[in-house]
Length: 393
Ligand SMILES: Cc1ncc(COP(=O)(O)O)c(C=O)c1O
Image (cartoon, rainbow, N blue to C red; front, side, top):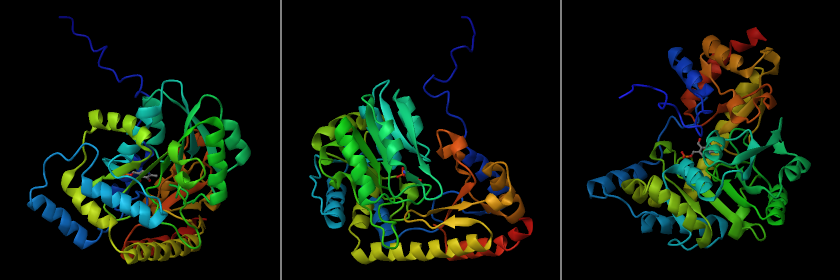
């Protein structure tokens, strides 16, 4: 047989995917033993009682495949959570599919609805899985920029992005990386366009409980005539500080669930069984858990904001999530990738340059992303290390 390597190539669908700057920054952060305010995961665990329930679930034999759409007890807990926080009653058996994290929920949803050539509106900057998922489905991402420094959309630009070819819009609120929380009037504007152009709305709400000050998280599906065209996606990672459990869900009308479940069943089939028992208990935690979480993160946000201000960076105080953008303009680097590498080597602190969150990276200017989902001791170490930075302005 002829030996040729010509067929050992990546599919055209994936050949545009490269290694992101995150990998490079993480390796450099590790090499310089940097305080990692880059990667968005807590350096502490969620509630001990929830860990115990996970351990008990394993010990008591909850170790075989879960039901394809999720364990009934977990789906009921998701429905209770929806009624408790949004006064929105959903049927657990027909309106929820449990997924392996919000990332799988986004991916399965996009594959379920997007045909080759369909346009999908996506705000930039955005979470880095959105565009690859649209591309794999053969869809065409249509970017709409969230403008610095407040990272909000321009209504004229958003309206111009809608056309007869638009099949869906992907929305993330509270928003990573900017911390922007869409308000009722912005959501109203989006929902009017979705109704006018008959467009599906896929809403990533993984930071739904991390909203500060007088901002509130409003669900797009609660806006007029949106219930039957909205898929609401969330997960337990951020709310309960168990990002490694990778357990999420997609909520929608029964009609929209069918195609989503069709993709999920042949992709993952079912998500991790014992964690579904623990996640059900987590969602049922009392209101005090949720209010304490917000309060703790608000204090950490304010602390990081003061650290960054003293360092000569200009933080945009985030409305939600555990991220904060800060302006590096005074440091005169040609590119924020260079600033991020320099900060690791000079101060031992890692942040994320947001170029890879953009479809058009030239739209990212001098802002970088820091996260505050860290122990106080980690933030204090960062504060000490930042003390030297002003010498370089
Ligand atoms: C906006 C956004 N969506 C989704 C995810 C991933 O969620 P999960 O870990 O549940 O897949 C993240 C994680 O960083 C995120 O920031």
